[in-house]
Length: 362
Ligand code: NAD
Ligand code: IPM
Ligand code: MN
Image 1: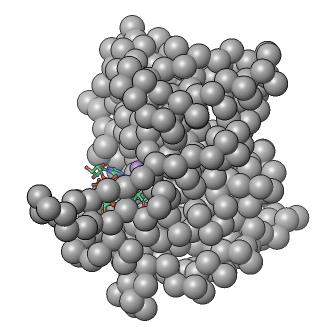
Image 2: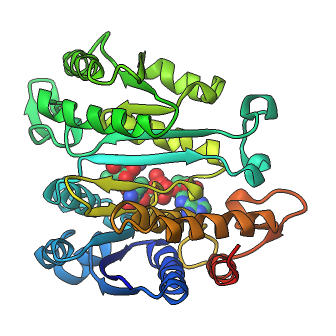
């Protein structure tokens, strides 16, 4: 059937372990559905600094461009924390997102009903389930403003970063949010800090203007501090949240606890066309690295998003999410989502279980 070329960037910390299990799952999908996935393993992050002196070697970007999609684990760790900003592992992520034009970051916080006990919210707040989507602008804002730097001023050293948004940047991410909302509950919450920041006032004005093209979608606005509180008080009020690069980063980690653990939250980073980069929302979890303890499901579910968004393989994507659901229903848990009476498994066994359930089918 289909032939797909996937750039694979394991990265640092738990990255290689969670990506390793995800490739097993993709191999199982290839087997079951008769596809061929060709993997090209590439360096980025701390391991790339160790091997080449650069967090994002040119070859990595070039190979990503030649691929149909990118699967990434995580980058970073204490070993590289002393390096100057431009040379840090995290620059690899920003470089990939920026150079590949991946401006729309989808972070779906979905609570599988089997994981209700892992979610710290009360049952009456959770209800049946929670299903919200953070649409984070990914190639602008304070992450990409005129380069932050330090300068020696009269009162000693100073440092600054700058948030810049153009109308065009806001418009395109707003359209992504409204389009997606049409396939969901048709509600968009715009999150900004328009009571303080000029960039947020422009942001809000543009989102409001774009909303006029989507009269079937309900729009409301919320300041980011209130949104952080509302996510815990009443997460069910949200369907699609659209927000800036920085606010989206912070709110999506908060939203991850709705799913039970940051180890459950996948993401897709998209631009024009079908190409995309897929990675878990969490980082390299140095505290778990090399111990077979990390939850690989966020990365496995990111691969499901890859099948859906970049390859148009909805049935195969569904096979992964349904296998995950069945593994959870059978009581298997990594440490981060463990609750009494369930069976504790490691990273590799979790990957194997997902493969087994895909092979079994429904
Ligand atoms: P982190 O997400 O790596 O870890 C935060 C906490 O969540 C830790 O307690 C960790 O054990 C836990 N956790 C994370 N992923 C998990 C998983 N799959 N299963 C179970 N538990 C998991 O965030 P941090 O500690 O702030 O950052 C560590 C490093 O990762 C830093 O260098 C940071 O810059 C980097 N980082 C990278 C990315 C990325 O590559 N996309 C994202 C965030 C942070
Ligand atoms: C994320 C991460 C990155 C971000 C860092 C590591 C650059 O936290 O993907 O959420 O802030 O975007
Ligand atoms: Mn983050």
